Image 1 (tube, one colour):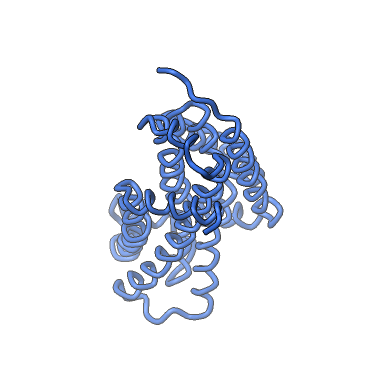
Image 2 (spheres, rainbow, N blue to C red):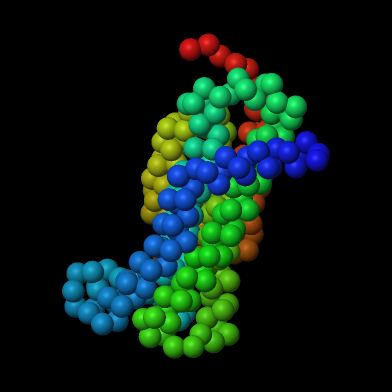
Length: 260
């Protein structure tokens, strides 16, 4: 078995046994689409109530299209938060649990270990977004939306893509958790990112800000804002993620053990 395969197997084993991973998986894969289904019911059956009015504000259309768009909006935020939290935990725990010294004794390079963490996390994130869409179709059928048509599948693919892009944007948080030697600073950076995203969006520059683009694309800022989000603006999520991965790998290669 090669070094890369050994690193992936080692990280996958730790990943599968982590309670935080199971919790985030349940929240995003199951609770998120079920919550969207509940909002859909509230918006269509009791639009005069407070929750009904708020849920109706998230609808961009009726039927499957409106429901799956709502799932995509929530997923674009939930994937960043959930995957971001797992990224911070995966990289920061090595320092919080004082296991970083053991990494120097492994036959696999530390940069290779960092890349293996990213590979495991991103594969899990893609499967999680896929599971979210599968549960969304089941929940939509339960609330009486009927048989989904081709248009619903296209909206589901769009929602899946928004979730995947949001998951990619969580990768740079690994650098914060690594340099600060703990997952809490990474979580703090995640919260700051959410606040900055809201501010940038409020000033009208959200389409060019990668952390806001997926949500706007799904209609979080309204149909007009969704139409102006271009493929180039969405693609910016990829180089941001790639830069975060590369810088984290470089830092892990040069990482030194500190006392205390």
